[in-house]
Image (spheres, helix red, strand yellow):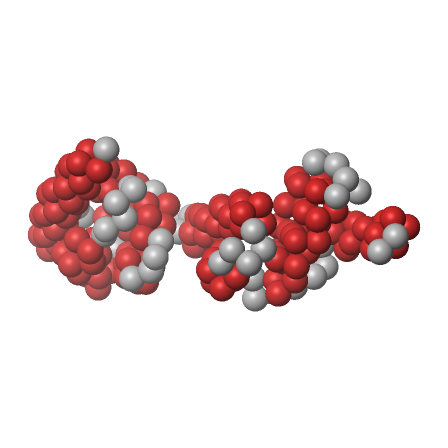
Length: 236
């Protein structure tokens, strides 16, 4: 191809990047074309950042695109498009994951902004869902104060649902990167429960059960964190 033909294609791609209106199946192809133009000298290095911004915009436009889908795409193509292309895809995955965490946090904050008698059931259902996922640390996005308050004002069913989760579910927490953070979160909940007390004799008994569950979960996760630290030290 002549320079003029390449420049014509480059301008068309430039317009496409600016709009970000393309689906995920084009991501690697667009990354590859863009890197070729940079390496050939038709575009300067600043287009690496512009490319990443465009990909992030396109990811937001495509309803089927999320971090999991992008990671699968990354695995499917492996090294077909080269190391540079994979590095850009890795950055995109990181940014999309961050966007997803922020949306989850905003949703959680909205859903649990008002605590009523049934909030404990809603929270425990959310916890059960998350503990089965690949992102168990999303549990820690729910403020300890909200968990404690939902225990304090909750009905018997609401308190029992939280008791059930802390008795079994929380002990399945295995995100090794946030075990210590999870222990700190549990301690905050326990401290808030002590501060609030209880409104009735049976409520006090159920709160006692929950505090015992939390204590056991703290011990389990602390041991798990210690093992993870020991394994890390051994590798180093």
